[in-house]
Amino acid sequence: MNLEKVVFGFFIFLALTLNFGFFVGEIDNPAHHHVREFVLLFIVNAVALIMKLGDRSQVDAMLLATGLVAMLQLIGAAIIWILAAHVWESGMTPGVMSSIVSLAGGAMVANVISVVLLVVETVTLRR
Image 1 (cartoon, rainbow, N blue to C red):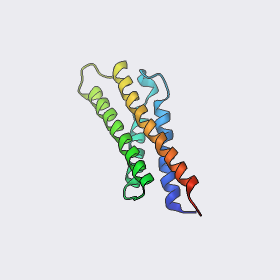
Image 2 (cartoon, rainbow, N blue to C red):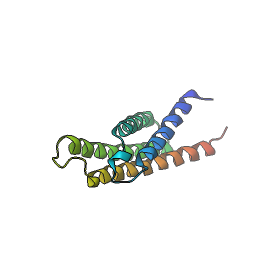
Image 3 (tube, helix red, strand yellow):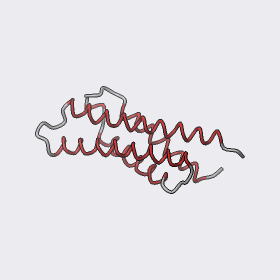
Image 4 (cartoon, rainbow, N blue to C red):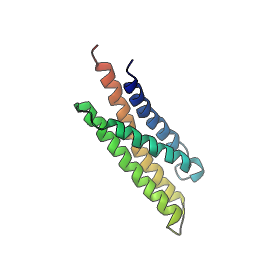
């Protein structure tokens, strides 16, 4: 067993499961989408993206692309959350929360594709 591959797979799967946990719930209800869970989701996705850097195969390039898409979506959601919480007078409205959850949903799709690519690559490996 290769410990590096175990840790890599762990962060890929953890990013997906945390994203799913944040995404589930009423889309416009801030009580169903906690900021701490979002911060943990953001950090784990950033770690997973860093781990995807430096690989050279075509599948690895696709994994990196999905990681970049997920991080871009999460950065957009974080910016909206920060602006709503600290800048905008309207605060955290149901419409703002819907936007944040929608962006997290886009990141979740990218994470699902990462997991599918990782599983396909693992299945096609020759010993």
